[in-house]
Length: 199
Image (cartoon, rainbow, N blue to C red; front, side):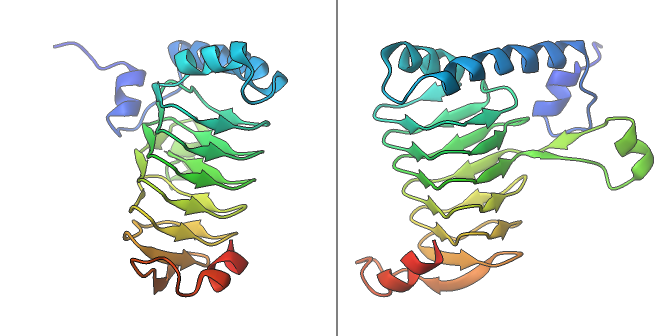
């Protein structure tokens, strides 16, 4: 029986060590980020590169500088999604962004985590879990989405929130840790001003 590689362990949500293979993948990603962040959105060369950089990328996607990620290859982005400036996605596992997702400046999406045990942590052992952000989600400025979270469609995450648990569809969440503040009506009009103030 073959022993799993650290890359396989990482994607299978097991504890892993960032060995030479993962270090080289991260290095190649860093080189790609230099190109991404040196050119403006809609630049033809940049757009072509983004299509190969991510696992999947739909049409009409906007990604502003300064974008950062660990590998790039584990990120899927749906049609019409907007990633504003200074967004970080730690894609040590699969991160899936649906269609028409709005991600405000300064957002952190982290599939990565560390062991609570200090001895394991200082020896550079990691673990990660996939993150799913479904269609038409709006994530407010400087919010943090933590490992293993799924955010339901049409949900809104208030600015500065820390999301540690799954978020139901059609609701506004906020706070540290984020809690449901209110449901969002199907017509989407009630309370728009209040939601805008939070995001």
